Length: 44
Image 1 (cartoon, helix red, strand yellow):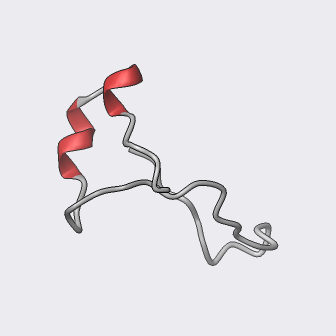
Image 2: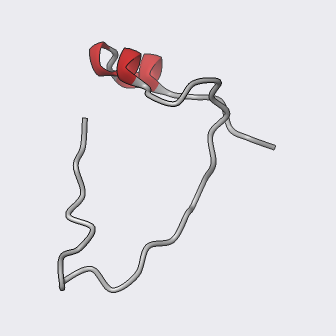
């Protein structure tokens, strides 16, 4: 799990590179997964 300091003065801008297809709000099930298992399908 990764936490980004969004309000940090060092961060200039945020850009979405890829969007994933998920069917739930909280992705807590990804916490226990590593590597390729933690990937989510790409949104078309």
